[in-house]
Length: 179
Image (cartoon, rainbow, N blue to C red; front, side, top):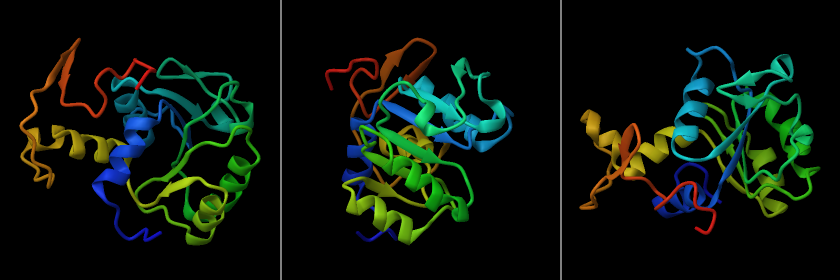
């Protein structure tokens, strides 16, 4: 797969299908990007599980933090990696040892490791590199346009009114598991 660019349908398909996201490198520091991404994705209705050995056993944004992916007691749909590229191969090996396998490995902005991506794809896992799910969700749902940013996506859809915020959303009802 060409990881230099992704079709909107590939990204939106991932964001529409996943429900449980493990964030490797999650931070309890509320000014860190991983914290913002966790908060945003939780607000969009995803189940987000922080993974950080230094925070294991504590909560981040009300979610129990685990030391390793293998410690998480539920199936994971997507692993979002907030670590340096040299940490990616070991994380991919940990992902490949999970049963069941997650459907997606997502590497955050500036994180890319082509060899590890190829290994994951060979096992049937979709891979996204050098992208942020928060930014992609906002771009594809039209929310990023509210700030005057050209998202490259046109829509005549009306926002969905939800408690505390409005959203074009990528899922009709993010808490509905029947999607």
